[in-house]
Length: 112
Length: 112
Image 1 (cartoon, rainbow over the protein chains, first blue to last red):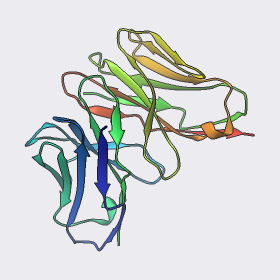
Image 2 (cartoon, chains in turn orange, blue):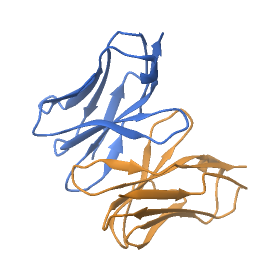
Image 3 (tube, helix red, strand yellow):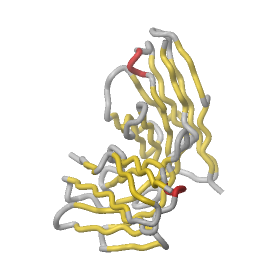
Image 4 (cartoon, chains in turn red, purple):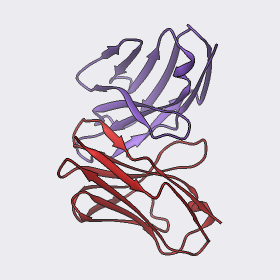
């Protein structure tokens, strides 16, 4: 069966520090991968999505970037965090087409 | 581009009553319309979805209707129970982009 792993679950980082969140999927190949951010009590904002290795589409430029070095690995990065980067970050995968997306457990990031 | 608006932002109903959440969209190429439920502190999970070639789909107490001409789709929950209390998100996807975008969410409270 397919599983999605996202870590860490919680993270507290100082302003100006770098960020690296990792997401991996098991049990499937060539998944569509997504990064979302959810501010407290708010909706799911699509940050990046990828339909294949090295193929990244950006929805929110800001100071975040994403990479897909392997088929089932999706990484969200920042060189210098801002206070406004705080939020709940969710990774998700789907098999493509009109199919269900499955979410990771999420990472609660607090920038202090 | 793709955009989806969700209403209401909050909804309070008495246990046993029905709840309806509506989403409207702008991109006529959208062809997949899932609904997700997110309990406090947890990841969103799919509860029902509908594809563009279907006007209505039902699963026990949950139903979704789609009006492609008017570009709106709705979630209907009948005989609500306290455990239905959560945040509900509509979403949509177009085959051409694989971009899965979400509405702003509806916080449903079912009063015992």
